[in-house]
Length: 209
Image (tube, rainbow, N blue to C red):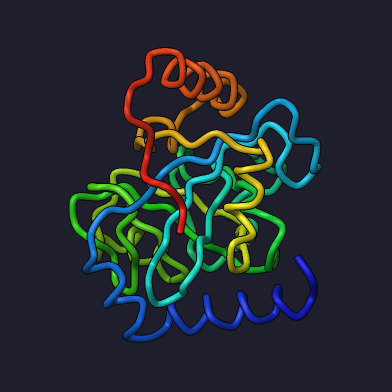
């Protein structure tokens, strides 16, 4: 992704998270699927990754968050003002190569957090840095949340081209995989799922774009 497109995606994402466009997008309902990197994909940014992607109309193109790349950093170090953060949520993850200094959160909850996008029935994506503090104060109930540094974004038709070139499998997303305790087991499990879907000729997720 060139620098001009990277800046544009970062700007649009920031607008979407902060404004009414993001709220409108989340009303469209769940729209998350997994991109599973095929073994042939050697790009170090995405090698052996599983990416939860979504297509909010306000943004206009797919954006995603890698779910299986834990970092050495802890969320409590990035947000020391929050105080105690539950162990299940304290591990930080690399979300993607774009805007790595920006925190995004995947949240598992029966109710949507403020300024969030629904990606599964009970999973939401938000860029609200106040989320951990709101949970700590008891102002919002989350079964679990995870902080991701950065995100993945694609320009017009870019992801479609990568899929057509054999870089990715598409498969259905689920909350259990997103919040799996053992990140190292996620990619092998999703490779098995994706290849089984192809073998069984079961329905695959809808096409991107």
